Length: 190
Image 1 (cartoon, rainbow, N blue to C red):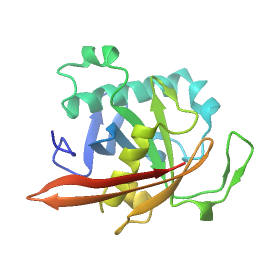
Image 2 (image 1 turned 120 degrees about the vertical axis):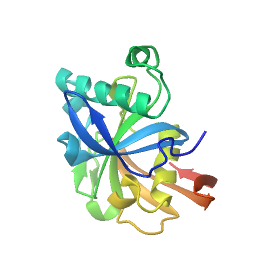
Image 3 (image 1 turned 90 degrees about the vertical axis):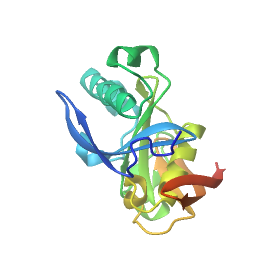
Image 4 (image 1 turned 120 degrees about the horizontal axis):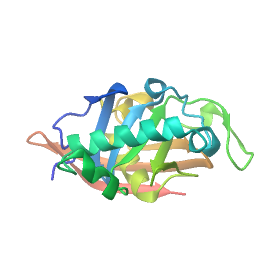
C-alpha cells in the first residue's frame, strides 16, 4: 500500500472522547502514528514510569492507536484493535530538550535533532523499536511530516533522536513519484 495511507503527510486525527490531533500516519518499517508531544500533554523527555504508571495515559494512547488503525485502513472496525496490538505503533515527537535518560546519562538538547517516545504493546518502550526507528528516519526525510518539523524542517538525510534510554541516529532517502512517496534507502546506527 501507500507509505501515507491517508494520502496526506499530516492529518487531523479525530479521536472521540479524547480530542483531535495533528498526526503523521506512515507505513515505513512498521505502521506508525506520530503525534506532537505537547498535543497529548507531554514534553518528549518522559521516561517509562511517567506513562506506564498512569492508567489514564495508557487508555488515551490505546484509544488514539485504535482510531489511527481505523484511519490507516489496518482494521475495519474498532473492535479489531484489541486483537491487533502490534500495529500501528503510537509515537510522540518534540523539539530537542535536555533530559536525563533512564541510564542516568544526561542528554543535552544540542546532542539531538528531536525527541521521540513510542508505545509498543500498550506501554512506553524503554528505548526504541528498530522498525519504529525506520519509520522515524523515513518520516524525518520527508519535509512537512511532524517528525521532520520537530527536527527543524527542511531536507534531512539523517537525524539523531533522543529516546528514554539514550540516542539513536537514523536516516533515509525518500523520493516522490507521481505523488507517491517511496523509500530508496534506510539507515540506523545504534
